[in-house]
Image (tube, rainbow, N blue to C red):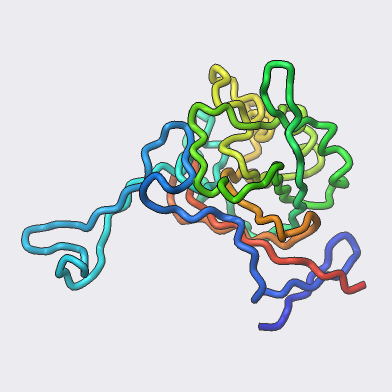
Length: 253
């Protein structure tokens, strides 16, 4: 498949569409997968109606399964402002473009006096020029592969300081992706300060902005600029399981 060419900030880039870098964590059943916020693990079961069973293994003509999952607690997911708003906002309505220039940055959350590990504003300020990228991808360090099956509930994972999120918003970032369960502290008394700051809620909600959590960016993918394809399901909820895919950008001039 030939590469596509695109212009960004006066420069020409090429992206090879047959060299995709998937940074999602696949949804799977059972405890051997990532999980957070005490959500039940994803479950599937064949449909049973009279003599019909939706399982070829059990003698049915086709596989025809029901699926039970929680987008926020099981695997990579993308959410819109509807996650925190009393009004109904569907991600399917809020996210209408799916390709963005994205900046990938690796960062070691800073240990705080209370033991929390937090990504601070000063760790991000020199990593992105205003208008350089609509999407920003955070890879936290250390970056072990067990992030793909880690159970985060009750562990107080790292999170982002609201000032760091405010800086990203002011730099023009509309789509924030990170390899953590949440931009906020696991237990914060319902403040959700980073969520509200990123979406500018409730003052002037950014309806077209999204947060994608529980990604995994393999260590062989270097920091830098990428073309991002953010894939979601067409479901009328505040969040959806998602599949963010990166394509390396080759500078042409």
